[in-house]
Length: 128
Image 1: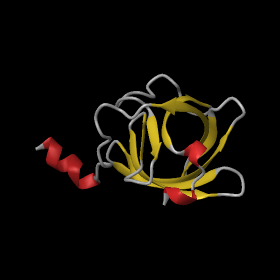
Image 2: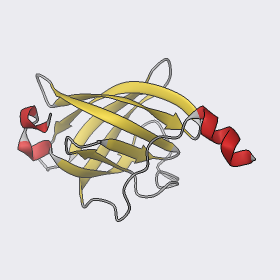
Image 3: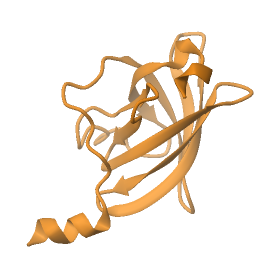
Image 4: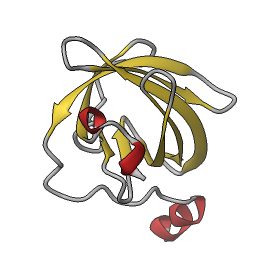
């Protein structure tokens, strides 16, 4: 899949700023990152962990995501473009919910792999 994604977008990115959501707490689950690698791409920020699929767009790249905020399943879309400063400028939308602009900088992969998004049934297993 990444064969069609321009190489300057490929890799790991750390979210450093959002316009709608508080930046405090972005790292509640670990470094707020997303991958554009073509192999099990994921995103993590605040209490959100999601699987991500990337697609080339007229400008930049677009994405869809499916995941969970804590144990509440949700999904959405987004779009990123590469700025002249080398940072990604993007928008993240939650289906039937909020949207926020964000800025991300190139990053190293996290030390531990991002886990798959939790499912609602996992909440009940955890509480037993």
